[in-house]
Length: 275
Image 1 (spheres, one colour):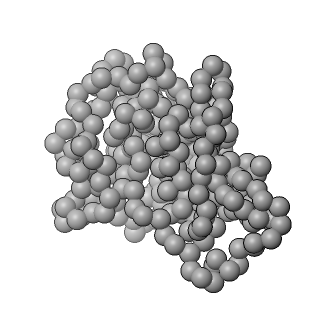
Image 2 (cartoon, rainbow, N blue to C red):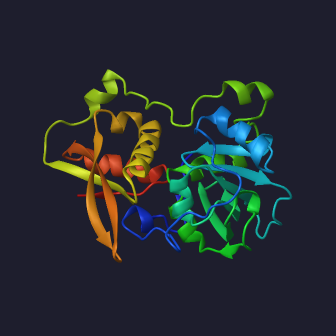
């Protein structure tokens, strides 16, 4: 399911500063999970946080999302409203948010594949522990989370038959790792990609570390296997507001393939810039 984000996703992807506060992720109980496989995170949630694994709708690179009850009151017809809870699962994500928990109100327009976020509050510790929460602009919160996660959140909100990763006790023990290997395109799909024309690289984001950039690229590969097959990312250092970020450039693409890749990525909720 594609998702056009009204709250503005271009900021971090094209070079906005990552929120860092004092510069270091807060230290708060409990520790991060030992590894970011889905079963390990499920056991961490059950043993170290107050969030029930059965309520989880998404496990991603550095975060866990849950829809908590009660749902927010509907403010307009035709929208699905959810109260989202986020728990951070690694130090990179904690640095991006300058916190380890978050709550937000999400409104999904399922008919038009769009979403809005509001009332974002960041907390210093897991389980909403630590200092009192602080408000964060919805646009900053949206761009701080890596990957194209809003599509999965929309599916959980809009599809009546949706089941989360911990819907059953068996899934807690046998779920696959978070970072699944990228899908590969078929020979027919590869043949459809042009091999002539000017060479282009497509900027898909700007990140604080190679790990964050690679995690984002893996998510793109998962969502766009045909368009990303045979491509890779290269990183370029870029200064912004006195900080150094890494621009992630995907490619190489020939001719119109770069524009096609960028259009497909935007359709799936991402952002990009053909260079």
